[in-house]
Length: 372
Image 1 (cartoon, rainbow, N blue to C red):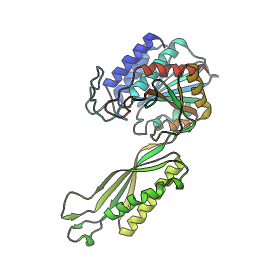
Image 2: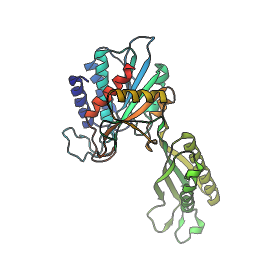
Image 3: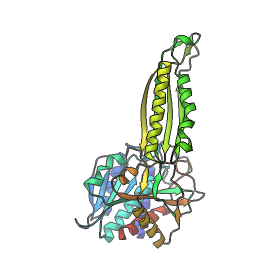
Image 4: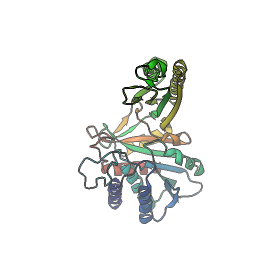
């Protein structure tokens, strides 16, 4: 990577870090990235899609169409470490490294703009990965531009510094936030029998979870994590009449996630009928399974080895989720990981900050994939 392009990308990363925006609020972030490419490139076509955008280097209509994606949303966290480029917005910070992912893609765009390529290269800048509804906004891009293959990476702590991690098949689990709402009828606390209290039904649902997630009942990992139980009010004279149970449901395979959801819904409906409750369901942060196509994953392996990088073959998928899976449902592609270091602070923690050096690692990986 050219020194001047690396420095431009690092400066961009620091600017993005100073101005974090949450999912679906990334107005400044998107515009700043767009203006960066307009300022520093001459051979790219830029397509503005309101909440997101992509740039294209066109080599010719008969050439392959290869896409690379970066996310650009931040997290609802405070910046608690002292950084010269620290967040200037209280309660918001780039604690997952999406500032670095976007700076990598922008730096890569500079290199392609200057050096050219024998393929049509698409640089996709995506919002709202953290909530799982960013990629789905962009997914029509795959068919509209007839994308043949798509790649992305995520920085990853716990991996050797600059090492590249890859796996065939499922790389990250499918997941969603599930809320069960139950409504009964209030009563004086001295006469609970004349009301309808959802507490017992909700308790029975929680007790049923281990049965639904047992390993022997499922092909892959299935998890149901209770994140909040909210029943009644802080009013000792009134029996509870409303309650919510919030869970994150997660699975290696989407069909098993769907079965877990169905089991929980059916059991909740049965409990509601037994106790005379009204029940409803709502869902948030829905992520598909992210599946790597072997052909694409093998390309990452080849480039990593050719660049002299340590290659880590993952023994199993990460439990976390990533909406990149929407793209690989429609075309070939692969998602890999670049190591922050085995002892480096984990993403989504106070001490985390993206390592600038990984910008060059990502750019060189992407350039190697273009040359194949």
